[in-house]
Structures are given as C-alpha cells and as structure tokens.
Image (cartoon, rainbow, N blue to C red; front, side, top):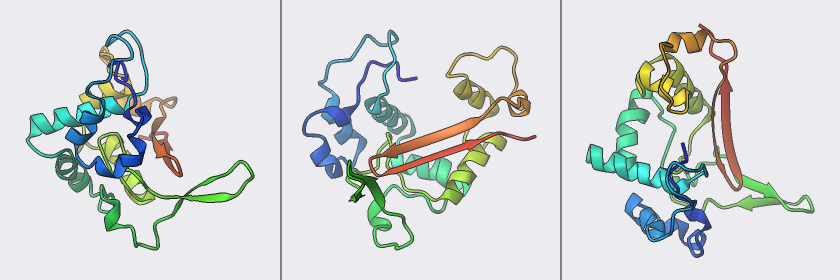
Length: 195
C-alpha cells in the first residue's frame, strides 16, 4: 500500500550509475538501510521501490529461497510463463526483443540501454502473451492467489465484508489493471472480466 515510509532508492545519489551491481535483495537494501523514513509508517502514502525490496527480503526469509527462485517456482512455472525472465543477459541478443527508447525535446529517438538488474521492484522481461497469461491466471484460477487474497489485493488490503471473488468478476464496473515501467520501456494491461 506504499504506507511504510520508505522512499525510492533510485533517488539516492550514486545508485543509478551502479544499478547493474544491485544483483541481490541484500545489495539493494544496503543502498537505503541508513536512509531516514519519509514519514512515520502508516501516516502517509508514497510510491516506494524500497518497500518492494523489503517485501522481497521477507519472501526470501520466509521461503528460504532467493526472491527470483521463489517467483520462478511459485508464479512463472505454475502459470506457464515461459517467456518471462529476470536476467536481461539471457535475451540481450534476441532480435525479437523491442528496444527501449525515448524522445528528446527536439523529437529525436534515443535508444535506452537497460541499466538495472531485476529486483523485487521490477525489471523483469516478458512478452505480451505471458502478460495475458498472468492476467488470466490472476482473474480465473488460484495458481498464484486464493480468491480470498485476490479480494484483499483488489480492495487495497481492506477486509471485504461478505463479498466473494465471483461477485467481483460479475461486477461490470471492475477493471483489472497491472502496469510497470522505467525510462524507455513500459507495459500495462487492462481487462474487464467476463463470467
């Protein structure tokens, strides 16, 4: 819910030039562990890549696996996401991968190199087909989350009194959306469930 008080470790001076070195959750946490909180936890809301890194550390501690192995075993494999990767080196020479780019203020197209290592806060690489599989799995099966956890997630972690997941899927006003991006690349998927 981005209410932890942690900030965005990408904003800490010296982090951006060394993104490729941040290959483990511990290394990421070391970049911000001594930074002051932006606010007392629970008293504000601020998007937090550091919060995602802490969540990754919790997953590692509870599961006994690296964050990446946990995601591989508990999401990618069960859902059948065979074209989703945490290691850009594996796909760097694949000519079917679109290049990242931005436009300058004069309209010139500028190629953007992928600088960061994947982490709990992002930088996985995927295909449109795998994003669709992810979305369909989230909505219609329990390979990633139980219906109860889906209700918690879609209500921003507020307890839902008596509502069932099928009620959400039948609600014509419900739109499921997931997004992510960084300079030069972006992905978003919206869907309106139909039962």
